[in-house]
Amino acid sequence: MAEHIRVMLSEKEVDARIQAIGEQISRDYAGRQPHLVCVLKGGSFFMCELAKRITVPVSLDFMSVSSYGGNTKSSGVVKIVKDLDEPLKDKDVIIVEDIVDSGRTLSYLMELLQQRGPRSLALCTLLDKPERRVVEVNVDYTGFEIPDKFVVGYGLDYQQRYRNLPYIGVVELE
Ligand code: IMP
Ligand code: MG
Image (spheres, rainbow, N blue to C red):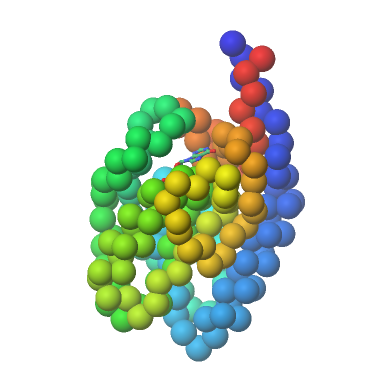
């Protein structure tokens, strides 16, 4: 079966929203230096675009966790595949994620990173699927709330493909 990608959020819409979040974070963190923690691989495109639009000084770090196998359903198992390079002690940390779905990954991560003693810990996600929530998570910055559809692009993949699309699309089998 061939796959077709239907555009859900255009490049222009995504860019405009990231610009607005960048401005919001710059205001909220005035006089501070937010430490952006990117959750690989999905969060990487969003994090780079967001960081470019933040006008206060920022530092960056990366980590990788796995909650999904090769399929599109959450296994509920969260494992650290690559940990952060730097400690979080006394930093104003903002976790940057591609999407909050069941909430399992983020609720686990927030708890884990909280134990490392940051001065503050916030969560910024490009996409949120509130209908799918199983575990409660407090999201501080959301790009878009979207319906329960499997989406790709802007870092999000379907079997490791489509991360490089500059927009958010829905995979349709035809
Ligand atoms: P959660 O633990 O269920 O919230 O899952 C979060 C992770 O599942 C995300 O970081 C993505 O890697 C993946 N994921 C959830 N929904 C989608 C989707 O619609 N497209 C691609 N990946 C998704
Ligand atoms: Mg992710």
